Image (cartoon, rainbow, N blue to C red; front, side, top):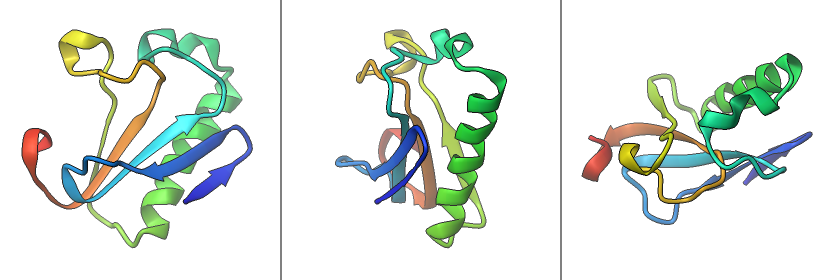
Length: 93
């Protein structure tokens, strides 16, 4: 769907909103608990990419969610940001 240096965006296969995207780093980081593995520049670029992907989808109002750990609902243990817009459904509503 979209990519930039070190990060990719894909559509969620089990969408919880009209638009449900996932933004992932290309390198493996298990969860948000390990966010310190990213340099300040990488973190900034990752968050800017989240915003760029949302804008490219035409979203002006949206939710950005990261689940950190199984107790918070994380089921895929590779850091990823959910970008949800266009009306929330399912468990993310």
